[in-house]
Amino acid sequence: MKIAVVPGSFDPVTYGHIDIIKRASKIFDLIYVVVLDNSSKKCLFTVEERMDMIRKSTEHLDNVKVDSFGGLLVDYVNNVEATVIVRGLRAVTDFEYEMQIASVNRVLAEEIETFFVMTQNKYSFLSSSIVKEVAKYGRDTSELVPPHVSFLLKEKYAK
Ligand code: PNS
Image (cartoon, rainbow, N blue to C red; front, side, top):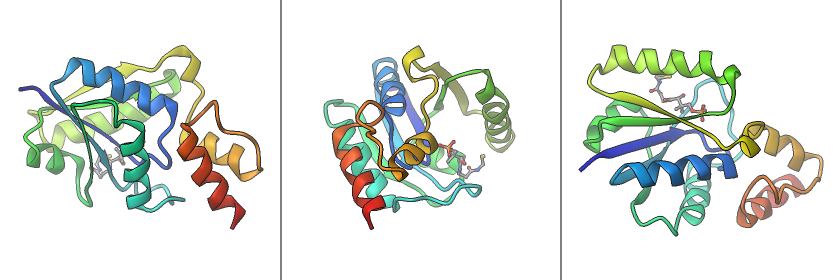
Protein backbone atom coordinates (compact mmCIF):
# COMPACT_ATOMS: atom_id res chain seq x y z
CA MET A 1 0.00 0.00 0.00
CA LYS A 2 1.39 3.40 -1.06
CA ILE A 3 0.82 5.99 1.66
CA ALA A 4 1.47 9.69 1.04
CA VAL A 5 1.36 12.77 3.25
CA VAL A 6 0.08 16.18 2.09
CA PRO A 7 1.49 18.65 4.63
CA GLY A 8 0.79 22.33 5.05
CA SER A 9 -0.36 25.09 7.33
CA PHE A 10 -3.77 25.27 5.57
CA ASP A 11 -4.72 28.59 7.15
CA PRO A 12 -7.33 28.14 5.67
CA VAL A 13 -7.65 25.31 3.13
CA THR A 14 -8.36 26.70 -0.38
CA TYR A 15 -9.71 25.23 -3.62
CA GLY A 16 -6.06 25.01 -4.71
CA HIS A 17 -5.18 22.71 -1.79
CA ILE A 18 -8.32 20.64 -2.35
CA ASP A 19 -7.36 20.17 -6.01
CA ILE A 20 -3.92 18.85 -4.98
CA ILE A 21 -5.40 16.54 -2.31
CA LYS A 22 -7.95 15.19 -4.79
CA ARG A 23 -5.32 14.48 -7.42
CA ALA A 24 -2.96 12.89 -4.89
CA SER A 25 -5.83 10.68 -3.66
CA LYS A 26 -6.12 9.20 -7.16
CA ILE A 27 -2.42 8.34 -7.31
CA PHE A 28 -1.84 6.96 -3.80
CA ASP A 29 -3.80 4.36 -1.79
CA LEU A 30 -4.00 6.45 1.36
CA ILE A 31 -3.43 10.15 1.98
CA TYR A 32 -2.80 11.85 5.31
CA VAL A 33 -3.43 15.57 5.11
CA VAL A 34 -1.48 16.93 8.06
CA VAL A 35 -1.65 20.38 9.61
CA LEU A 36 1.84 21.39 10.74
CA ASP A 37 3.54 24.44 12.21
CA ASN A 38 5.29 26.77 9.83
CA SER A 39 7.56 28.76 12.14
CA SER A 40 7.51 31.77 9.80
CA LYS A 41 3.69 32.10 9.81
CA LYS A 42 1.26 33.35 12.42
CA CYS A 43 -2.03 31.54 11.88
CA LEU A 44 -5.54 33.00 11.91
CA PHE A 45 -7.27 29.68 12.63
CA THR A 46 -6.53 27.17 15.39
CA VAL A 47 -5.21 23.73 14.46
CA GLU A 48 -8.64 22.22 15.29
CA GLU A 49 -10.45 24.75 13.07
CA ARG A 50 -8.05 24.08 10.21
CA MET A 51 -8.48 20.31 10.56
CA ASP A 52 -12.28 20.65 10.61
CA MET A 53 -12.23 22.78 7.47
CA ILE A 54 -10.06 20.21 5.66
CA ARG A 55 -12.26 17.34 6.89
CA LYS A 56 -15.40 18.98 5.55
CA SER A 57 -13.69 19.80 2.25
CA THR A 58 -12.46 16.24 1.67
CA GLU A 59 -15.29 14.14 3.12
CA HIS A 60 -16.14 12.90 -0.40
CA LEU A 61 -12.66 11.35 -0.73
CA ASP A 62 -12.64 7.87 0.85
CA ASN A 63 -8.88 7.45 1.18
CA VAL A 64 -8.11 10.80 2.82
CA LYS A 65 -7.46 11.19 6.57
CA VAL A 66 -6.88 14.50 8.32
CA ASP A 67 -4.41 14.89 11.16
CA SER A 68 -2.09 17.37 12.89
CA PHE A 69 1.44 17.13 14.24
CA GLY A 70 3.65 19.35 16.36
CA GLY A 71 7.06 18.15 15.22
CA LEU A 72 9.09 17.60 12.08
CA LEU A 73 7.29 16.56 8.93
CA VAL A 74 9.66 13.65 8.28
CA ASP A 75 8.95 12.22 11.76
CA TYR A 76 5.23 12.34 11.03
CA VAL A 77 5.77 10.65 7.65
CA ASN A 78 7.68 7.82 9.35
CA ASN A 79 5.10 7.54 12.18
CA VAL A 80 2.27 6.85 9.71
CA GLU A 81 4.50 4.57 7.59
CA ALA A 82 4.23 6.78 4.54
CA THR A 83 7.03 7.04 1.97
CA VAL A 84 6.03 10.12 0.00
CA ILE A 85 5.42 13.82 0.71
CA VAL A 86 3.12 15.54 -1.80
CA ARG A 87 3.42 19.30 -2.38
CA GLY A 88 1.59 21.50 -4.85
CA LEU A 89 3.43 23.81 -7.24
CA ARG A 90 1.62 26.88 -8.56
CA ALA A 91 4.28 28.84 -10.38
CA VAL A 92 8.05 29.17 -10.75
CA THR A 93 8.02 31.43 -7.71
CA ASP A 94 7.15 28.43 -5.52
CA PHE A 95 10.16 26.50 -6.73
CA GLU A 96 12.90 27.92 -4.51
CA TYR A 97 10.82 27.59 -1.32
CA GLU A 98 9.75 24.06 -2.21
CA MET A 99 13.27 23.04 -3.15
CA GLN A 100 14.48 24.22 0.25
CA ILE A 101 11.83 22.20 2.12
CA ALA A 102 12.41 19.11 -0.04
CA SER A 103 16.19 19.39 0.41
CA VAL A 104 15.97 19.73 4.21
CA ASN A 105 13.61 16.78 4.34
CA ARG A 106 15.98 14.72 2.20
CA VAL A 107 18.87 15.49 4.57
CA LEU A 108 16.67 14.49 7.54
CA ALA A 109 15.23 11.34 5.94
CA GLU A 110 16.78 10.20 2.69
CA GLU A 111 14.26 7.41 2.15
CA ILE A 112 11.30 9.82 1.90
CA GLU A 113 10.51 11.12 -1.59
CA THR A 114 8.92 14.51 -2.31
CA PHE A 115 6.38 14.41 -5.13
CA PHE A 116 5.23 17.66 -6.79
CA VAL A 117 1.80 18.12 -8.31
CA MET A 118 1.05 21.13 -10.52
CA THR A 119 -2.12 22.99 -9.54
CA GLN A 120 -4.70 23.70 -12.21
CA ASN A 121 -4.01 27.01 -14.01
CA LYS A 122 -7.15 28.55 -12.58
CA TYR A 123 -5.70 28.20 -9.07
CA SER A 124 -2.16 29.30 -9.90
CA PHE A 125 -2.60 32.68 -8.15
CA LEU A 126 -4.41 31.27 -5.13
CA SER A 127 -2.93 31.12 -1.63
CA SER A 128 -4.26 31.17 1.93
CA SER A 129 -2.70 34.62 2.39
CA ILE A 130 -4.56 36.02 -0.64
CA VAL A 131 -7.81 34.54 0.68
CA LYS A 132 -7.30 36.17 4.09
CA GLU A 133 -6.48 39.50 2.47
CA VAL A 134 -9.70 39.41 0.42
CA ALA A 135 -11.82 38.32 3.42
CA LYS A 136 -10.25 40.88 5.75
CA TYR A 137 -11.60 43.71 3.64
CA GLY A 138 -15.07 42.19 3.49
CA ARG A 139 -14.98 40.90 -0.10
CA ASP A 140 -16.49 37.64 -1.33
CA THR A 141 -14.23 34.56 -1.18
CA SER A 142 -16.69 32.06 -2.65
CA GLU A 143 -14.58 31.45 -5.77
CA LEU A 144 -11.48 30.77 -3.69
CA VAL A 145 -12.62 28.51 -0.84
CA PRO A 146 -15.58 26.19 -0.09
CA PRO A 147 -18.73 27.82 1.37
CA HIS A 148 -18.08 26.61 4.93
CA VAL A 149 -14.61 28.20 4.86
CA SER A 150 -16.03 31.47 3.47
CA PHE A 151 -18.49 31.47 6.36
CA LEU A 152 -15.76 31.00 8.99
CA LEU A 153 -13.60 33.70 7.40
CA LYS A 154 -16.52 36.15 7.61
CA GLU A 155 -17.01 35.20 11.25
CA LYS A 156 -13.30 35.69 12.08
CA TYR A 157 -13.09 39.12 10.51
CA ALA A 158 -16.44 40.26 11.93
CA LYS A 159 -14.97 40.00 15.45
O1 PNS B 1 1.60 25.44 3.76
P1 PNS B 1 3.02 25.78 4.10
O2 PNS B 1 3.05 26.81 5.22
O3 PNS B 1 3.85 26.20 2.92
O4 PNS B 1 3.67 24.43 4.68
C1 PNS B 1 4.98 24.40 5.19
C2 PNS B 1 5.17 23.20 6.13
C3 PNS B 1 4.17 23.29 7.27
C4 PNS B 1 4.94 21.92 5.35
C5 PNS B 1 6.64 23.23 6.68
O5 PNS B 1 6.87 24.45 7.34
C6 PNS B 1 6.90 22.05 7.63
O6 PNS B 1 7.13 20.95 7.18
N1 PNS B 1 6.83 22.31 8.95
C7 PNS B 1 7.05 21.31 9.98
C8 PNS B 1 8.43 21.43 10.58
C9 PNS B 1 9.47 20.81 9.67
O7 PNS B 1 9.44 19.62 9.36
N2 PNS B 1 10.47 21.61 9.22
C10 PNS B 1 11.51 21.15 8.32
C11 PNS B 1 11.13 21.27 6.86
S1 PNS B 1 10.81 22.98 6.37
